Image 1: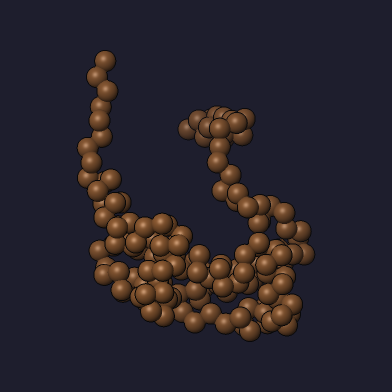
Image 2: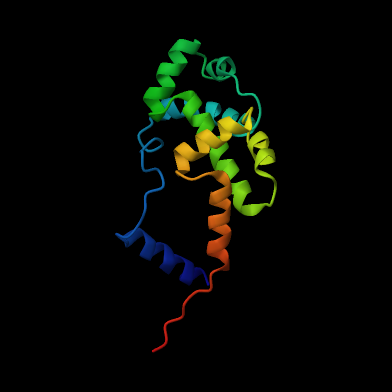
Length: 151
């Protein structure tokens, strides 16, 4: 069994067919010092994105003024602090849309959005489809029988 795992890991290591998860190279390009400064901020975001997130609190975690933090965050992540929060919230909402049957308004509020119309607008900007249609499309794709090729 262990040899099988080692064989799989070896094949993965040698494969040229892969999709890089960190396509923006946000994590890979950070120095150790940058990681020590920014990782606690990401931990704060992960813990709080569904609630009120404070720019002042994040800047304080990084031991920076809010202005310096905003510039640093954008330079480090290539996104603004607010864009990152919205991305976290939308990713959570997408997960809820496909894993639950909760009403979309509930998902919007649970994801940290203050109002449903802002949620719809941000969702449509990112996904190019409304949350309701996204859910319907996902559910439809689950119900479609897979075609089996017959030789």
